[in-house]
Amino acid sequence: QVQLQESGPGLVKPSQSLSLTCTVSGGAISSPDYYWTWIRQHPGKGLEWIGQVFHSGITAYNPSLKSRVSISVDTSQNQFSLKVNYVTAADTAVYFCVREGVTAVNAFDFWGQGTLVTVSS
Amino acid sequence: QSVLTQPPSASGTPGQRVTTSCSGSSSNIGSNAVSWYQHLPGTAPKLLIYSNNQRPSGVPDRFSGSKSGTSASLAISGLHSEDESDYYCAAWDDSLSGYVFGTGTKVTVL
Image 1: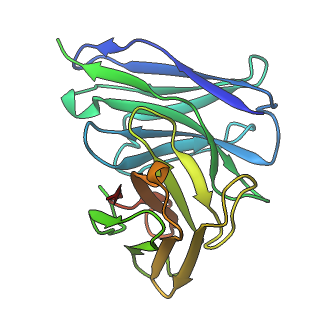
Image 2: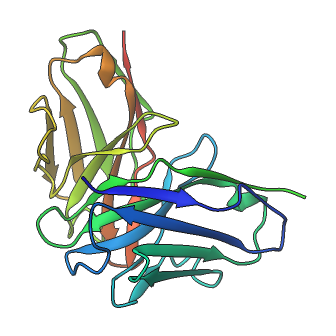
């Protein structure tokens, strides 16, 4: 059974960078059958797709965040990471790392538990 | 910024059938597959439906999905108390070149 676990600081100061890592167990992140994705949920709001990375390093980002976001993959550690630059209070959210199937089940089939990141001085 | 519109709430008594809709456009639902997720706040969301109407293994057949044009629907038959949760639709949007989610529907079991 695939498991994903987010890790990183729970508190970030405004204008600084938010960095999170997702560790994948029970499956290889180098598989060509999946994208590795970050999704967030603002307090009391719906879900927002941040972006995705393929094992090759190819990425796609939400246009509204593209200028501040980068997602990378480390196949040797079976991890992928998110960095959001110049954060503001509007980046306060629960951040989920998620696996998306490319072929058989083309949807977000496994999710991490989520980690709350608060942007505050 | 949610591009897909869902009713904010739906409710039913145990055993009833409850449906919720997801309205989009030609660039998302109209041309791409829809998936549905169950999310109890504080937990990891769970995939219920993919490719408009397919259930992953382990999801009860009480849950069903359909799509017509630029709208999709999720139906829960034989409502259980544990079905009380938030439900979100999602689809790839060709204009945005990214995924969009619905606004979410809170299902209450009366």
